[in-house]
Image 1 (cartoon, each protein chain N blue to C red):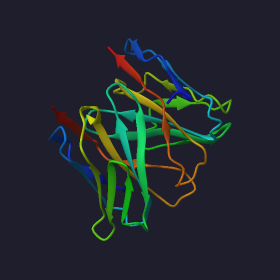
Image 2 (cartoon, each protein chain N blue to C red):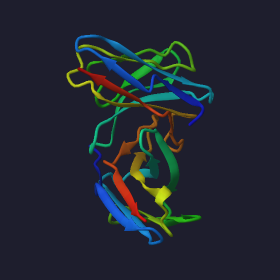
Image 3 (cartoon, helix red, strand yellow):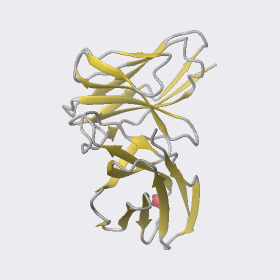
Image 4 (tube, one colour):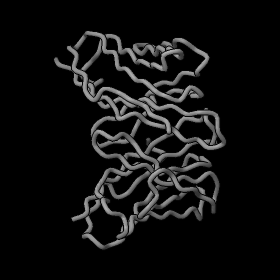
Length: 114
Length: 112
C-alpha cells in the first residue's frame, strides 16, 4: 500500500539492543496498528492507537513500546526485554477505529536479532 | 478468546477453482474478511462480507458464509499463477475498537 511506509525493509540487530521500526502514513487515517507475523501463526496484535497521544496494548505488548505524537507516525520500539524479537512486523491503518473499517497494511519490516 | 482456523496449505492446478476454508468460534462476529499476502509484502484486502449475508461475489472471487456452522470460504475461479500467495481470513465483532482476529493463513500454490 503506497500510503503506508515502513522502513527499513530489513533490520539486523544484536541481542540486548533496542530497535525502533518506523511507520508513516499519508492516508489521513485515525487508527494505526502494529502486528507481528510468525510462520504458521497468523498475525498477532502488539499495540494500536485510535487517536494522537493515545494507544492501547494488544495481545502481545510485553517487550514492546510505542508512541503516537503525530497522526502520521506510529513508531514501534522492540526492547531488549522482548524474548523472541526476530519476526516480520506489519503496520496497518484504518480510517475509523470501528468494526467495519478495513485495515490497510504497509509492506512490513523483517527484524533479525542475533 | 476468539479462534480462527485455516488449513495451512492448498495446491491447485492453473485454471481450476480454489476453495480456501476458514472456521471461527465467535458467534457475534460482525464482519469477516479475506486478505492476500504475496511474498515479502503486507496484506491486501480482497473482499469482506457482513454477517447478515450468505454470499458475496466479486469477479473471480466468491465468498460463502455459513453462520450456523461458523464457516467461511473463499472460492477463486480460474486460478492463475499470480494467485499464489498466503490467504488470511479475519473476523471482528461489534466493539469500539477495530480489532481483527486473524487465522493462521493458507498458502495457496498454483501449479502451471
